[in-house]
Length: 218
Figure 1 (cartoon, rainbow, N blue to C red):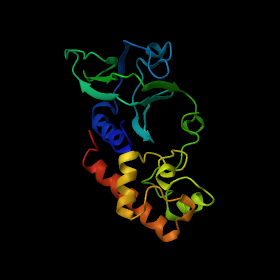
Figure 2 (figure 1 turned 90 degrees about the horizontal axis):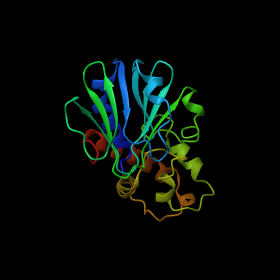
Figure 3 (figure 1 turned 60 degrees about the horizontal axis):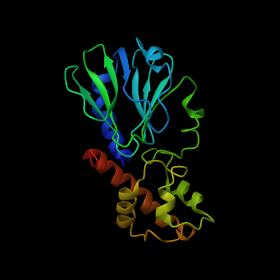
Figure 4 (figure 1 turned 135 degrees about the vertical axis):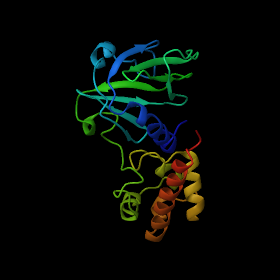
């Protein structure tokens, strides 16, 4: 499953090809993703400009004129930039044609991903409103982690993989960070002291930064 480094790698890869472009056409070959692609989305976004490509947790956010496209890669989804004459792959479900002559294609064999639309503030969206801080942001600190672990009986690995606590720390990255911090994955969360939390936050940030630098597992 794509985790934060893979999604960030994807964001950085598609951004130069999409930012500032106009959408010529959206073609949906299969609406049956994790949630159905909204009816009428093709007409709604045609002609709109792509102002920015951002990320929140594992969601890619395409900021358009009147709202935002939320894209989630699910368990097997991927995005690639293609030319119009490139043959479609078997599981290419969505094509986004741009005015620069390129296309953004979404491939998802298991169809657990999503293409959704909102014209409301992103902070209030049901899929984003309850997410924890970004792990590479200034909001994710040792003090924040220490305070969040008080009276928590779950194993520390389970807790740092909870997107309500902090987003994007998937299984392989949680294992790496805990190993580098010298903390057993099954240790009860409430037993970590400030020194433990300081080491763990430092290693989570280091592991994720290194993974993004190397392109994750993409």
